[in-house]
Image 1 (cartoon, rainbow, N blue to C red):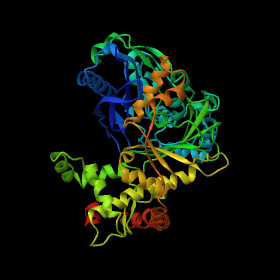
Image 2 (image 1 turned 60 degrees about the horizontal axis):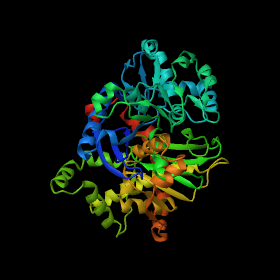
Image 3 (image 1 turned 90 degrees about the vertical axis):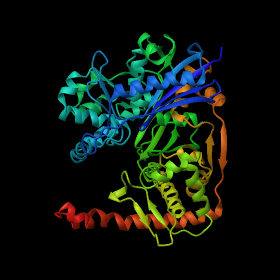
Image 4 (image 1 turned 180 degrees about the vertical axis):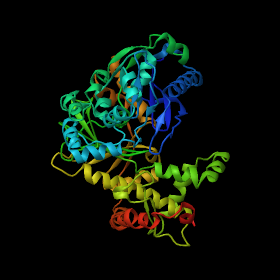
Length: 518
């Protein structure tokens, strides 16, 4: 028998189903796109059953493509994005579309809570900030705007928990998703009842899921799930963690001197603490399934999604041509950036296509007629590194801040040697990249390996399943260049943001759209 683990990672854009051996090596994967639904401005939703069906298809194809006997699967564990919400009735049927963590419909509600003092009271109870895609304010919005959805809801679930419901019938969550959702006080692990009382949301309390250990078995694959996925009925399923925590585990982050960084849709940084960080107060704070510690996370939508937008829009034709020649567009982009690094470059890029500080817009500054594609791509790489540095300046400043001396990097940019080195140079710390590519799914596999007794605990699983594959030390010469550019980047943001929010907005106010476009 060949013992295998399956990790599922339902992220913001793709659901990935990955096959691992007991040493954490990736043996195969299948990916399916998650279709985003934009029914209103600022709304980002997902049909939960469409996601489930795509997951089933991916599992079937993974087993077939790898020639895996379903009897060789030791356990399956789902992971998924944190925040957002999935509401189901007593039969487990969704009462409406699920919400993705990029949804921003709650912003007016949060602003009202901030004016009234509710936000301050809630943050004190949940030991983290309130943010738009967080499950807690989403429930508040539902209560006010869709009372019928509240009435029909029997269980509040999060992304990975919905998939596990479909796999096994289990209705529960783990401390990491509960922390990210804002429904518990991380220091106690208990439901933050006082927060629900402060916000007038006690109607949700009896709909919240039970909370159990991340690395624990919750049941087996049901007969119906076995029919749909090709897995063997009864195959054990572990509860798992949400994807940011999964990436930290799969990066081998266990101690306060390590920082977990993910460069993807969001710029994400997480530090390990013996007790919750209250100053600075992070975007997200969760219990961490390693030695009773906590993970403080800063997350902003300012990372590699900016490059993805450029590739899908302005470089779509080049991407198609590269595919036809058997090369990845990312390989071509890395080559162009590598060449551009050999000469002076004073172009700045502001990676705020999906939101920036103080209303700062995305865009370039410093381009000339002599600017080439490689020069602009280099500026994009550097601008994203600068955004990560800005987030770190918040997370690493304050009496409760961790003092890491090493970054473990995950996400698309970690696969680029050019970009990984730039992170080391721009952030001024050594950068290490662990083995593998699908870290969210691997975090689930780590939980499964512990839940089934293959390894005694999460640290032992990390020791056996995670290896550092590449390491990058800061280059002093490049550090000096990026330091000067970072200073210019911040000065430019300070100048541009007020002009954009006040000047240009006022200039277009009342001007017909067609005239303004001219």
